[in-house]
Length: 250
Image (cartoon, rainbow, N blue to C red; front, side):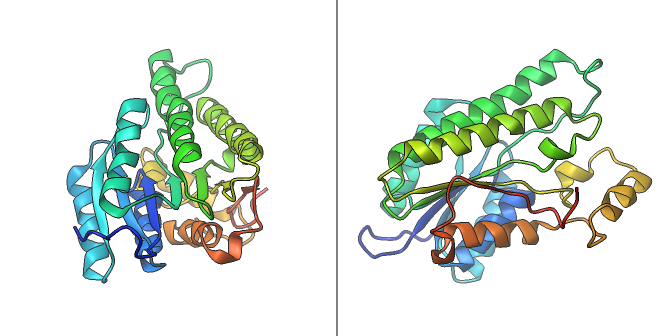
């Protein structure tokens, strides 16, 4: 871990869910953009440490920090670590999430409760700390999902949770009037991550890949590029928006 002295001008990013999938690629992209990155993880310490090593090998600065996003005390400690190690927080990308799939009539409500804790309560807890701590010129990016509009069968609980994420995003952008902080959401379509591919057969994956006009699944790099824009100087006039990064799928 490389530390950054406060006042050196380096921007600092927290990425939840940073040990895998979209979050992992976002962490690496933001490090390449010049951010010192706090790689947030829930249970995959080895994977988070690997991300840190990758970033440092490429000349960046990063550290790993464990936090259950559904626990507000642990989320506050995650932000504390960013401030202690690097001096502040300039970008927050909330990529942590769960995706249990089942028809609404069959979903175990225990799975719904776990989904709520991570995807809704977790988003609220992370956004609450971001609203309190982001420095002027900062950016918050929540990760939603294009399934909110696509309404795929089997995604009822997940889509409902991401609908809540989008509502929180739009309202918080307005509540932060005068703070010079942007708040947006990125809503990926089908993206080739372990979370998305888990439990899907080849036929299902091929069908989903054929739906966008670009006729492929998205990649974590595709989504990280959008986050890079929103957290960079080119995205400062984009605020209170949900960007559907899905290759044109409708």
